Length: 234
Length: 216
Image 1 (cartoon, rainbow over the protein chains, first blue to last red):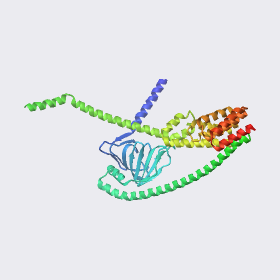
Image 2: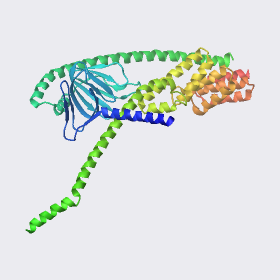
Image 3: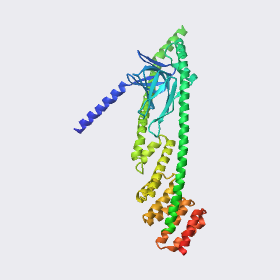
Image 4: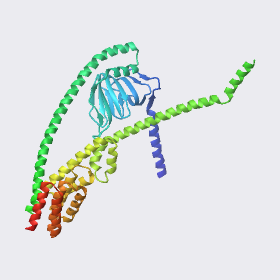
């Protein structure tokens, strides 16, 4: 009886394994060419030497290389470091490294949830962020959004652009304004972050000074207590 | 005519010597190899995802089951996640354990304080609070009249931190223990050793006072 049960269990596992494997689709780009998946509401382009796993109709997992996507809120882009989804309609650029992923939002707004976190953070157009491995706090180590480096972004985008080059030029002219806004926004973010860091450092120093004073007083008290116990009042 | 025959011979040779089959087979093997490499990469990616998932659970697990000898495998697992930051975390935990012990000592809850200091000595051996922990542990033993343990803790202190100021104070305490145990000669020896070996004014002064008290 137990053999039959074991057989049924293993058969079930085998069925699940085969089913799960069959439902994912692997897209591998050749050494010299990119792969484009273009359908009604979405365009996903995988750069050369890239590897992408399509886990279901709307879930894309970037394993290696660069990816460009024009998508709606239905599409979900994953890596082991974060999960991203467009808020409405957006254009994104992702570059996968071994220990991190660089995500750039080219238009629209991107909602990104670092692994281990529950709350999504918003990445506005013209900004990018890097997400790394999970740190000691149980969340993916991520940096504050940065403005996009113009040359590098444009070069990567041009390589992955699915349409013709004239169309890209027009898009790029529009993007220039977005990029400028992004630079402004990033500088504001950095300045407020720096202000907060300075304030918290000052507060930390103040607290340390208070603690040091307390500790000195406590040490003096402890020594006095020790002297008292050891000699004067045994 | 000869040339024609030679051409026909070479084409027949190529067709029947199995070279084409080999070429096809090599192509097929290359393709299979590429597929296997992709499959391996996908598996590695799934494993990385799993590791990331485990890493998200580690802080909570460490909090609950990461202490003591039994928690070593978990601490070891966590140390592969982020080593340097983990060390900072350990130091912060050591500090909090020490502060708690000190607080309990101040409230004269010696049994509880003892537990904290022992934990600090056992789990955070390289913490900067270790000398003070030994000293306060010896002091808690003394307050609870556990002289044997007090003496052995002070002996450990002498071995580990021979020139630390607190070791001097602990040795004065050792002398006091000998006095209580009615071993005045040993107590005098201890006080004299402290006066000779510890240049710090407080320690030497304390030892002198103790010695004077004995001779009165």
